[in-house]
Length: 287
Ligand SMILES: [Zn+2]
Image (cartoon, rainbow, N blue to C red; front, side):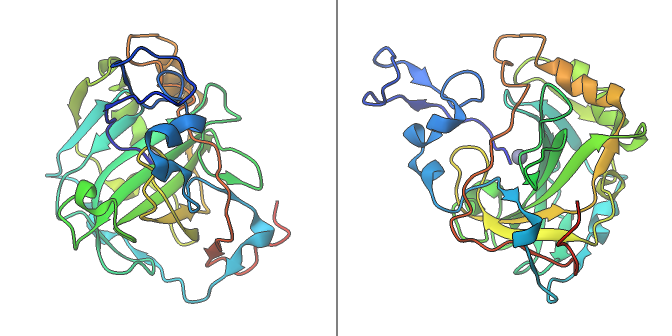
């Protein structure tokens, strides 16, 4: 998952050459790389980090995992959606308190804040989570905060303060539901560019949401707080090769400040004894 970038003054002793007073930010290909995020944010070196590689043979069936209630996300007419290039990803901001998710064995109701994408440079990489060691081409994260808090910012350093719904995206048929996003990518090619897009129904973007994996983890971007209840859905979203290529090409334009808009994913982190559960009864043996 991904939040707005934060500038902090770089401190020496890191082993990375820099000029005193120079301001460094985290990044995937510029600034401080993922393996060194812990230098800027010690929380990125925690023991319950995300993403992870979900090994099906180690996943535990939990018959108590409930279905989600996503009915509020059908709302389409009057929800303002703002598409933004924040320098690290393409984000759709949806600040509407009526977009609530319940069920899914979450501890209470969660309010949708935004969704964003992670992608690669080729089809065989791009997702943050892996299944049995394999990437999907992209991953979409719907970021929500507990309704006990007013915002993601307020909730993001509290256990279970955030919940993220993760969806794998792979190449298949043309997907009309993503067209209002993809068609507008050309309008946000510079960092901090944004554009209001046609209101969209979130559930139309989703695949079937009955089956999922569940574990406790973190933000996948600095400050990597371990406050996230992760749901990674079993069913994938499909878009066409042409549609995927529109994301691939964003990072090739080399606009200043947009170097991160390709391969903008963090690699899987150690499980460190965490348990991944699922409501799929028979996982072992599936490919
Ligand atoms: Zn993300």
